[in-house]
Image 1 (cartoon, helix red, strand yellow):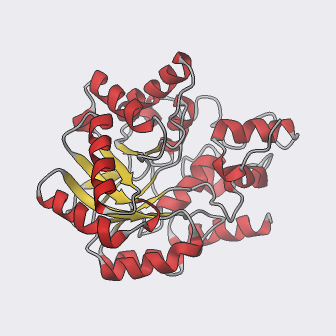
Image 2 (tube, rainbow, N blue to C red):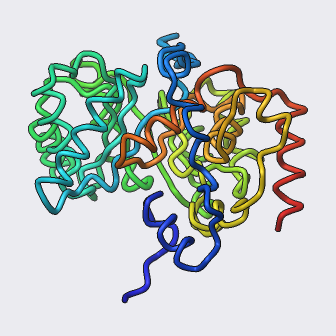
Length: 325
């Protein structure tokens, strides 16, 4: 069997690898206790929201990442469509995709159109091109695939050719075709370039890596985003490339009980606690964990219910996490 990059594993794949290695207890490290996050009160209680600084528009603090929305069978397509249909039922609305995510945009566009959900969703995608002409062509393909005349957030993927792309996106914003402009990275090594871009370009959003095990962004980028009034999406909230990805994060807590103080917050899984840590940072607007199953979506969105961690609880969790290394 070929080896897989742990940072690219889905939650299901991480579980399978951990279970195969004997690292998971009988109860999954990030599965909710039976009924705990699926009862009527948990399902229908409102999600915590935060405002987009540039407009005040409010978004739920947990959304949906779709880099694995590439179905290989009708059954897989049906499962992905079920996730998209369930998202608004659970109170969610943020969907993040990209032109380079294979079929992701077309899967999302087709599902939202058939379910009549487009107007209820906050739809974000990305462009990755090296010149204005190819950038325009890519963006037009995204509009077609997503089956929408308007994209809520269009982002320059991986900070590529911002001098060409950001003026193009600003023109589209003025024309009313997109609502917000952003930039993205998934690498701590690119945080310096992101800081320069924040100072140089007119932006509404940034998207980057941040997790309990990969806190570099909190040192410079997140404070800078707050100072500049930018919304922040977090793209690898369970662990980035440096931290070994989600599989490493869940392996660290496998078999360990949740701290009692976390249970008192209504948290019922490690996955919820790790997400709640991320979105409790005052600069973070929304985390977008990659999700391909309704059960994982439900667990993720439960992290956006109740209340967020305060500063003392965040520090307490950091000490606990570091002690498990």
